[in-house]
Image 1: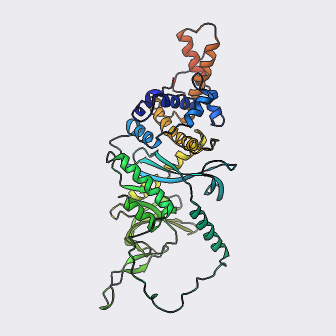
Image 2: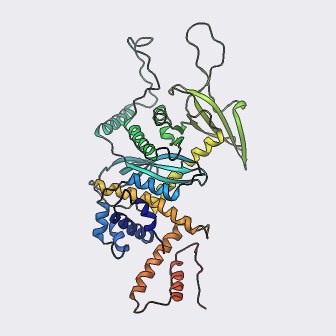
Length: 454
């Protein structure tokens, strides 16, 4: 049997006993249920003590999910010997209708266009050793009317601008009269970055030094100066990706001309002809050659030098090349670590995949603010809970998977209902045989020996 209630006892300081008992029943039902993960579906699989009204009460309860995520991670998932990184990303959930709280149009990379739905920004702690991400905080994205208006105006201006047209030059030469120097370090954060900064700040305050965090991993959407300053204001180093055509410059190392300000920017980086002195490693995989370059470079939109790693792939047969530009605000970070850390950012995408495929992130039909928050947080919390349960089974069977766990829970539910219909409870040995046979029906890697009668 899968024991969930003992794992949730760590919630006792912040959660009522009734609520975490309801959560235990709902989580066990989600483990075994098939079909769409909705409140009605949960009520059909919870059994005694889990009516539809009980499920409704649970989703209408204000739950401190941020504290629950941290308590569960600290109690059951944290390993002192492991190094953790903080990763963040946005997930879009498609929704129809007009009544769902926070419904708007958001860009979904799977569709390649804005779609109607909900958007959530999630933070996850990524273990460098196990290469697994643990969701630790999630917040729904709700754009203000000012943001929507600015976005529409920007899109309209972009559409009205003819292809190939250049910006109109300002009349008159030189600097505008009355303009003053502005520090690049003082930036006005966008509403999007403000929300992320508040979420990261709340997490760091919750951790309160228990877990040392140094790096914040974000995708290429945040490869800009404002995002870097946001991370530095949170006392974290940003690791992200720049555009492939980013205008990077070497620092000027020539002589001083003797008058005027000292020259700062040297030669611009040519991605097709990178100096060999910055080459760190070359790998050959078949006829694909991968070269890693690292240098401290300058960008005119950034107020500080960047630790840049350029990965160049070359097809030795066709000589076709492609490159990726990664960067970090930590100038002392080695190239191999920078590449490894950025690749670990993708682990949060697997969290989103599991939450949508198994735990109802794409299925829930709640529309009220509290219910929507509970549904999204519960889906990502189940990612952590299922991982913790898998650790127990993988001690004896390394290949035990999430599908096996769901098949085990579903088989146990079927067996439980069947046994209740029998006039007399079977003997323990026969009960064990029934359990082994029924729970192994849908499993790929069964952890228990399946006893087959002759």
